[in-house]
Length: 161
Ligand code: HEC
Image (cartoon, rainbow, N blue to C red; front, side, top):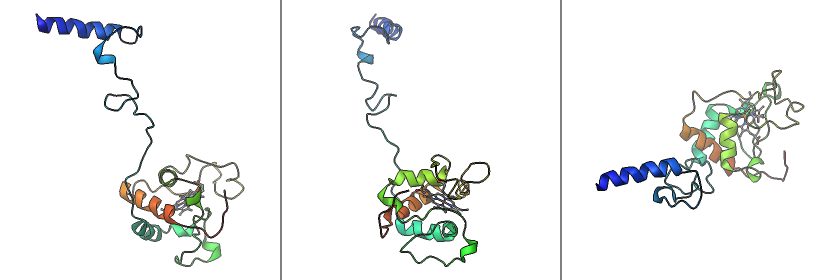
């Protein structure tokens, strides 16, 4: 009899959930924002595993990111001016962006395109970023390391975008 009763009350809960607030139904009391059930935890935010800036710097050199990105204050392999591809200088960026922003810039360069990007030569004729896709060669750890490296940079003067 006990089990039959609880099955009935579960059925009642299911059929009444989402209806009137005053219905007392123990399984539905938890607010959807609370962690644990399937709702979003309050203040949820995407976070990266902690990266290693020194490792990130190595990857930056290995993958030749410097071919498009100058990094002020760093001695990276020298590039002939005409060999340089288009990309913003990166040493100032840590002041204005969190680490997740840099990770997104690497795995999804088209996620944020600024109004002036076309004039700056950052975009191809298709209106998309000239930044290559590295997603099939970078591990998540390497993305975290690169993002940590860029976050660790301290530019010499304050400039925005
Ligand atoms: C062929 C040129 C090119 C190469 C190589 C390149 N990038 Fe980029 N990158 C760009 C361009 C152009 C932009 C600006 C447009 C955009 O946001 O995608 C950019 C934007 C970025 C940004 C965002 C800057 C900001 O504040 O908006 C980051 C971070 C970045 N690149 C990191 C990297 C890393 C790390 C590598 C190497 C793995 C790399 N890039 C290789 C061209 C390049």
